[in-house]
Each structure stands twice: as C-alpha cells, then as structure tokens.
Length: 386
Ligand SMILES: [Ca+2]
Image (tube, rainbow, N blue to C red; front, top):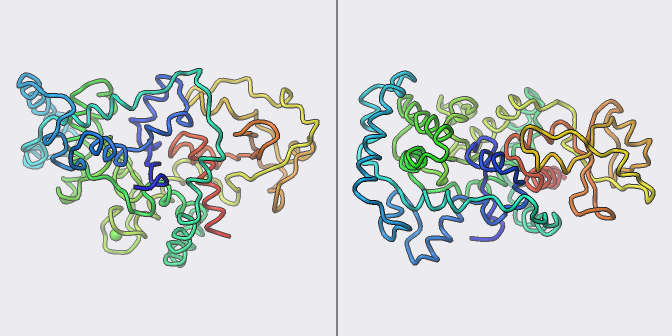
C-alpha cells in the first residue's frame, strides 16, 4: 500500500464518518491517519500479524473476543429487522439469504472505535505535504489515462449535466486510486456489526437494509464487498447512495460501479447533479493576496450547522467582482463571471497559496467533508485536464 492510497473516504455518502465529525465538530483535515477504511484495516491486520481482513476478517486474530451472549444478541437483533426490511420491499427469502451465517465482526467494531476524532483544539496540519502525496505524478498520469479512455462518455455526461469530466475522474482517483483499492470487507457483516454495536445504529441500520434492497434488485451476494464502514465500488458509495444515484452508462442495464468505469463515472456525475453542481463554474482556483489584505474584513462570523470545523476555515462569501476589488489575483488563468460567489481559504496560513472556492467546492465537500479532500480533488482534476 502506498501512502497515496491512504485516502479512502469518509465520504459524504459515507455518513459514518460524517456523523463522527459532526458529533465532535472535528475537521477531517485533522484525521488523516483514520481516513482510510480498507487500507487502515490492512495496516491493522498487519500490525496484529493477521491476514488482511476479508469476509473472514476477525476470525483469525480477533481484536476482541465476542462472547456467546453477544453472538446471541447479534442474531436476535438481525432477526428483529425483518419487518423493517419487508417495509422496504425485501422478501423473506432475500432477507434470510442476507443474514444467513452472519457473525459479529470484532475487527470492524474495533476499527470503528479507532476512528475517533482528534481533539477539537488540535492544530491543523499544513495542506501542502498532503497535496504532494495525493496529487502526485502517478495519480495524475493514471487519471489522464482514465480520462482519455472515457473521453466520449465523459464529454457526453458533462454536456448533459455540467459536471466537468475531470471532476468525475478526480473523484474516482481519490476514492479508490482508480479502482485499485475498493475494500474487501463483507458489507452485510460489517454493517450488521456496526448497526448492532449501536453507537451509530441510526446510520448503519438503514444502510444494512439498503444492502438487502440491492440484493432484492439482483446485485449478486458475492459482489457485496467494501470498506469496513460500508462504502463500496469505484466511487465508494454507501448502499443508500447506490440505490439513489448509481447509473448504468455502458448500456448493459446494470449500474455496475464495481468494475465498469463508465457506470462509476456517470454515477459520480449523478451524485454531483443532486448535490447542486453549477454548470460553467469552476470548483475554485489559486489566488495571490495583496500584502495589505485585511483578513478580518472578510471573516466568516456564521457557524455552519454541518461540518463546522471544515467550514470555519472559509471566509464569508463575496462575488468575484468584490474579490477582485480587494486586490486578489488568480495565480493563473482568468476570472470567472463577476457574479460567481466564492469564499477564501488559506490552508497553510498567510503568505502561502490561497484559494477562492465556489459553490461547486461545497458539492465536493458534500461527497466528503474535508478541505484537504476538496482541495486535492479540485487540484487533481485541474492536472488531469491540463
Ligand atoms: Ca452498466
């Protein structure tokens, strides 16, 4: 595993991670070591001398032992979900097939507990070292390959949706390193464990039932693998997001985000359409500030209800015309339309590269609420397009 691969998502569709952030008010910018799912699991497994986690993860060298009482409670809990599954259109046959042989996975529970937020007042590391690791030559080169291989499809999607071709590719690159790392935890077992464990049942139980709905609609049982927290496939969608946003783009009638690049890229675009991507606006761009720039004058005094630690690093919203009047200059390229609004971020503090971020940047944060994620997706997209 390379360091570049350690960015698997806590994705916006990954409510698991978002919830832990929101609860703590933590920015994911501060949680790099705990951002990965499958890679972290593999690292933990290695540290424990255990095989990499898979469907059998936990049985070889459990992180903690599970008593018979827990297993009995687990099974009883799952049986109790039948009415809820039925209400979502899951047949008894599918339900029985879904829970057959499932056991509590202590490794998943341990990974989830390990994914704890850092202290709210912990210092936020600089972005630049992160950028160098995640917008690296290998990821750019392979992104261009994916881009070229799917040009016809991508340009068609961009024409229809306004979501830029390179943004679809960059999300694919960031989530799974273009499909290299998608996770090999059994989704049903992981989600059942997390739902039963109960800390965030309100999030995980509906996702568990959503997997059953996927089975009901014909997704093969053996395909149901992903991160320990239930994200799967090239774009690392949660089950509920798959049901809502996944699309067939290669024409075989199945939204196969596990191995079809066209399907995965179209599904990512669909996610962004729903998240409010605005056609014709950039995600953001690097800018230079004048030496006399008055930061207090543009400070944001509102506290966001969601992802507050991420949003509080942004200035208040101004139009491009207003930013220009304050003496800000793009480091390259030209200004977007005067009326486009943006916030300002200085991820490494005054005197370093600053960025103006549009509403489309917020759509990227909806996918995964982290400034490091959003900036590196945008910058990778720029490089892929270049
Ligand atoms: Ca397909």
